[in-house]
Image (cartoon, rainbow, N blue to C red; front, side, top):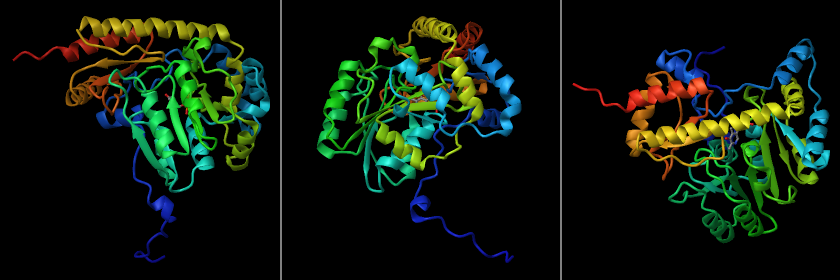
Length: 371
Ligand SMILES: *Cc1c(COP(=O)(O)O)cnc(C)c1O
């Protein structure tokens, strides 16, 4: 082998993909800051773990990890179909919503197509948009941190993007668009447009506040076991959509891409409603704790329907510096990147003990050091 030979160049579409990391993981931060065992409140993972039934089921099935999972995820899809009141043919399982984002962009967009979203919303959709050579058009949040549905509708009509992405509830703001407004956005679509409705936090929302009807040929709803169900590491989520779209996804997805443990754990979790109910209730108490913490410090916070809360720090530069300081103090949190919440930090609801620890470190970081 000659030392001066170069590796072959990737395809032009791939070569043009910008080098970005949608998220810097806490493990990377721990290595960077030399601080193992950080208080892990930055990725909206569940502090309450998976259901004990899910853990037992995975333990029981551990020896069968030598087998591939069912490529059709049939049992899980059947259980979901019964629960949601739809057909198995309306459901596709992915290794998390992030996987489904990739599928949806690949399915509906060609290089040169346009996708529309709120600037600074959940990053993975835009990451895949960039990876497939699709143009990203954004509109800003409203001044209160809510998604500006009117602006999305306006651009959707005038510029006719192929896809419109809405995370509802939104991440990183935590804000929620009422179902009537989502329906207005849906009704504004041209027949060839797709609404990607990312409902990663649907479990934290009262069911009557979710968009009705469940099924719509132009809407692809995505849900996950990563948040309320505490299974982020098992990588399992699903989309609810038209059977024809499900079939298209089936044709191009990784056939054995779903983790067998994830299938098993998700199925067992669906039989433990009491556990999830408990998580959702505790998360609600945790949000109240964070609102109160912000108020004690004379800071604003954003009402949230998720498992995290944004707390005001000051200017963008001040919030960035504060975040750095928290990281040095062993707390992993993240912050919104775009206005109007770029002067805020975003904190995941932890256990009561984690919340107390966070409040202490927060207070210490807010206190100016005396000379
Ligand atoms: C956490 C999150 C996801 C990722 O879900 P996975 O199923 O773990 O891939 C997707 N969308 C939003 C809005 C999220 O907050």
